[in-house]
Image 1 (tube, rainbow, N blue to C red):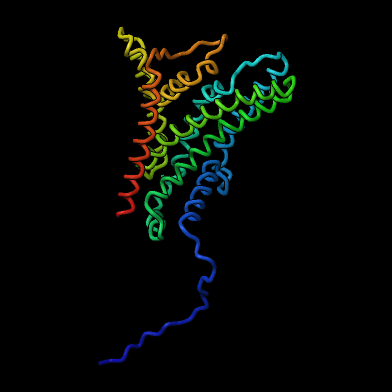
Image 2: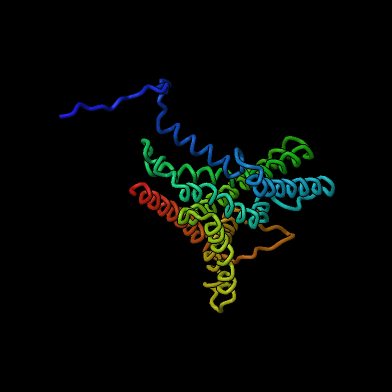
Length: 293
């Protein structure tokens, strides 16, 4: 029987002797990379154009609102109303950011490399979801902080500054609601395909093409259908929850509510919770299937 002739050559590679970081560090790395990706950081200049254009627009609107308020001495847009006013920009931001977070990995086939390490299949989508929620919250929350600083510096005394802070906090919570709902829906849609164009188109379609359904339901002769119409579309669903929880901050003397909730405010809240929970559950199921391949 011939002797084996194979030879192992030492070509100079060194073994890793550093610390072995665990699951928490892997999750944190995925999350931080996701936040950076949402804003195009660490990527080409082309990838930074749209997200930072959106950031510039929302900051410019906040600066304009603050400047006008300082000149006329009146609030022309509350913190909560700011999130509603920027909803269209948020939709397009999600349509660009969500495919960047997950569709690229699906198409390039790197997910088996992620799951070849001791990484639970749920950690990857949850880290990406948390990153997108954070990016959207920063997109809506940072301009509100700018508005708060402008209002605080022009306030008369610490009591007025405290009142300003009490107006800001519900606005930030409302921004968080927008971020959670939009990120959950957007990331689920993006996870269904590795083609970013298809993912972006699907996200825009879900958010915008459901709006006419709200319009149709709102003109039906049934008052119940009119009051529940906002449930049919994610943007109006979020607005309905906002109207139920903070109507005084969203409806002022200068404007009126587009939605008539009647006594169905709690229903809007329950549907919003169910929508987020359902999207997260489907997202986890989707990546459990991917990890099993």
